[in-house]
Image (cartoon, rainbow, N blue to C red; front, side, top):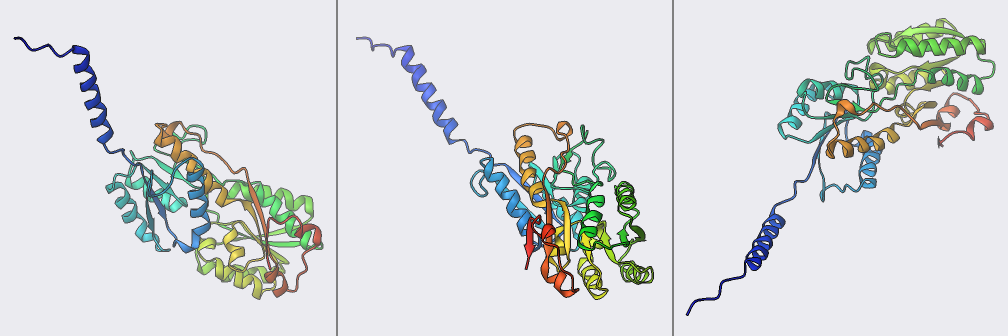
Length: 328
């Protein structure tokens, strides 16, 4: 007696079921992000928090469907090349950089792994991208280049010191974007009837000399345009401004958090939150070369009332009410 033939449709169903089971057993690849910073975790905790928030908003949860390799140089820039090389060795899917020096280290370490700048003063001037509209390489992200803000910063100084006539501007002539910022500030100075005293700060030793020159020039306030030297030596800058009893406005919130009087500029935390969008697009197949560099859309005005009291300055109520954050 012959066995009944197994129906061919049953064989197909069994094979399909086995295929589905095998596919289900294949581990899902979890994307790996490298995060490169020249600072310590505590000093940029708000920015890291904003980046994580941005990822969560897009459905990414660290430890579940995404892995982040955190690398911090702890304010030792000479460690950046080795840390960048480490991330390349780990074969991360994308590297997020928290400042221009970190982007440069990543650029030197890889030409294939996508790099997302959380912010950069001047990505074209720094040689990271061919243009903002078409980056053209493996780097894209966000720029905080807003040279027109120097004019607004000068206006704010004039508002808190109505009789202001002389301002010492701490600049870094070699910094990309510096010339445009100076141009905007000079236009504002002319309109406000303020005389500018330009003081070039190219190294830490220039800072104290700049304040001595400002005193000789009878400066009544200070405007710090930014640059790596001023940012890395911000505590000294803040202390010298207080010692000289000079109202000062800065380009970055770190100065005010370390005791400075005022800051007005792009919201760096917002840029870090938006960096997550680039990560998402790249993980979904977009190429950095085709993702335009975006510019700031949110700005922050911060005032430190402790610093104002220290130099005997009263902030006018109409200025105080416009602050996004007040340190008391």
